[in-house]
Length: 102
Image (cartoon, rainbow, N blue to C red; front, side, top):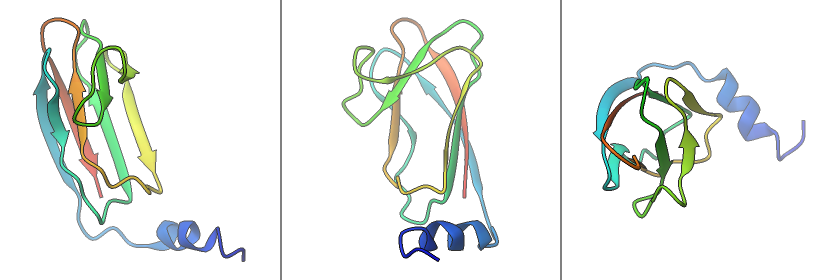
Protein backbone atom coordinates (compact mmCIF):
# COMPACT_ATOMS: atom_id res chain seq x y z
CA UNK A 1 0.00 0.00 0.00
CA UNK A 2 1.27 3.45 -0.87
CA UNK A 3 2.54 5.47 2.07
CA UNK A 4 0.39 8.35 0.82
CA UNK A 5 -2.83 6.32 0.80
CA UNK A 6 -2.28 4.56 4.12
CA UNK A 7 -3.78 7.33 6.35
CA UNK A 8 -6.89 7.50 4.17
CA UNK A 9 -7.40 3.74 4.16
CA UNK A 10 -6.90 3.59 7.92
CA UNK A 11 -9.41 6.42 8.40
CA UNK A 12 -11.97 4.43 6.39
CA UNK A 13 -11.49 1.43 8.63
CA UNK A 14 -11.83 3.42 11.87
CA UNK A 15 -15.01 2.75 13.81
CA UNK A 16 -16.96 5.87 14.65
CA UNK A 17 -17.55 5.83 18.41
CA UNK A 18 -19.15 9.27 18.67
CA UNK A 19 -20.41 12.08 16.53
CA UNK A 20 -21.78 15.54 17.11
CA UNK A 21 -24.56 17.56 15.52
CA UNK A 22 -25.61 21.15 15.79
CA UNK A 23 -27.29 24.15 14.23
CA UNK A 24 -26.10 27.67 13.59
CA UNK A 25 -27.92 30.74 12.37
CA UNK A 26 -25.84 32.89 10.03
CA UNK A 27 -26.56 36.37 8.76
CA UNK A 28 -24.68 39.21 7.09
CA UNK A 29 -21.73 39.00 9.50
CA UNK A 30 -19.36 36.00 9.56
CA UNK A 31 -20.87 33.57 12.09
CA UNK A 32 -19.33 30.35 13.45
CA UNK A 33 -21.01 27.22 12.08
CA UNK A 34 -18.78 24.54 13.61
CA UNK A 35 -15.66 24.88 15.77
CA UNK A 36 -12.27 23.47 14.87
CA UNK A 37 -11.86 19.78 15.68
CA UNK A 38 -8.47 18.09 15.42
CA UNK A 39 -10.11 14.64 15.51
CA UNK A 40 -12.52 15.35 12.62
CA UNK A 41 -12.82 12.63 9.97
CA UNK A 42 -16.10 13.72 8.36
CA UNK A 43 -18.14 16.92 8.21
CA UNK A 44 -21.41 17.75 6.48
CA UNK A 45 -22.93 21.24 6.58
CA UNK A 46 -26.48 21.69 5.22
CA UNK A 47 -28.21 24.95 4.36
CA UNK A 48 -31.78 24.32 5.58
CA UNK A 49 -33.06 27.57 4.13
CA UNK A 50 -35.17 27.28 1.00
CA UNK A 51 -34.60 30.92 0.10
CA UNK A 52 -31.20 32.12 1.38
CA UNK A 53 -27.82 31.51 -0.18
CA UNK A 54 -24.94 30.98 2.23
CA UNK A 55 -21.21 31.36 1.72
CA UNK A 56 -18.86 29.32 3.91
CA UNK A 57 -15.19 29.78 4.70
CA UNK A 58 -12.82 30.92 7.44
CA UNK A 59 -13.46 33.62 10.04
CA UNK A 60 -13.02 36.38 7.44
CA UNK A 61 -15.54 34.91 4.97
CA UNK A 62 -17.58 37.30 2.82
CA UNK A 63 -20.21 36.78 0.15
CA UNK A 64 -17.47 37.57 -2.38
CA UNK A 65 -14.88 35.11 -1.02
CA UNK A 66 -16.88 32.24 0.49
CA UNK A 67 -17.77 28.87 -0.98
CA UNK A 68 -21.33 29.11 -2.34
CA UNK A 69 -23.92 26.90 -0.64
CA UNK A 70 -27.31 27.21 -2.37
CA UNK A 71 -30.63 26.88 -0.52
CA UNK A 72 -31.22 23.26 0.55
CA UNK A 73 -27.72 22.11 -0.42
CA UNK A 74 -25.02 20.33 1.59
CA UNK A 75 -21.24 20.60 1.73
CA UNK A 76 -19.33 17.44 2.66
CA UNK A 77 -15.74 16.82 3.67
CA UNK A 78 -15.01 13.10 3.88
CA UNK A 79 -11.69 11.60 5.01
CA UNK A 80 -11.14 15.05 6.39
CA UNK A 81 -7.75 16.57 6.53
CA UNK A 82 -9.44 19.90 7.27
CA UNK A 83 -9.86 20.31 11.01
CA UNK A 84 -10.45 24.08 10.91
CA UNK A 85 -13.49 25.99 12.11
CA UNK A 86 -16.11 26.86 9.49
CA UNK A 87 -17.95 30.18 9.31
CA UNK A 88 -20.90 31.28 7.21
CA UNK A 89 -22.44 34.48 5.92
CA UNK A 90 -25.48 35.48 3.86
CA UNK A 91 -25.73 38.42 1.50
CA UNK A 92 -29.09 39.37 3.09
CA UNK A 93 -31.32 38.06 5.88
CA UNK A 94 -30.43 34.92 7.82
CA UNK A 95 -30.30 31.16 7.30
CA UNK A 96 -30.10 28.12 9.58
CA UNK A 97 -27.34 25.62 8.89
CA UNK A 98 -27.07 22.16 10.42
CA UNK A 99 -23.95 20.04 10.72
CA UNK A 100 -22.88 16.53 11.62
CA UNK A 101 -19.29 15.52 12.22
CA UNK A 102 -17.20 12.64 13.50
